[in-house]
Image 1 (cartoon, rainbow, N blue to C red):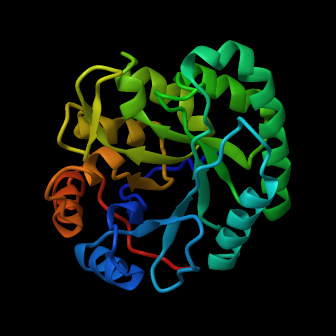
Image 2 (cartoon, rainbow, N blue to C red):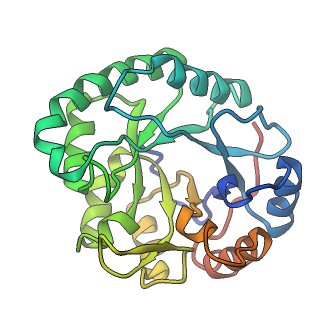
Length: 262
């Protein structure tokens, strides 16, 4: 199940997706300097052991041809980085919202295969409900994970997708956290489908209230800042400035724990 325990600090990291064109070591050096607990590594990257890796971002889909070898490659990467308590492999799952009722049985069957593979490697896999995907509502995501019933097939909770659908932070978080392996944080502006994702703190999510809820529900797992493609494509995007601004906005609410490589 999820990492649930009283927390005064959290493993708070930022995705290396937010550092396009930067050498990995330069990105890691800045994250360490700013005080982050770790980073999210992109799938296909070489192993990183000089700074903690909290998660690995995949882009697997449950539609189209099955790709168990791709998932297995990322599970091996996670295990090679840290054999004990390996980083989470997280991914979206594809499809379109209107397809959900029809495609759910296919998702269920394929996710059970993912769960068996994750169990073999003892590496948690976390799927994300995404506003543009077949799996888009928090209740559907929770029901799917409960039905699979694997401690290695869990959720990547990202409230920005649920906020755009009018879901409550308190209610969706309370239902999802027992099945959550990690959390992505970012903000949004506008209304779906013409929304744009933002850096955390640039929208209307109340991170002080968010942190209080995480303490109340005793969540102690990774929290990772996701830098959306919408942000990366904005004119003048600066990775260093973005990382610093996110630290200034979030550290007061989610104090980062001391980095641990073991």
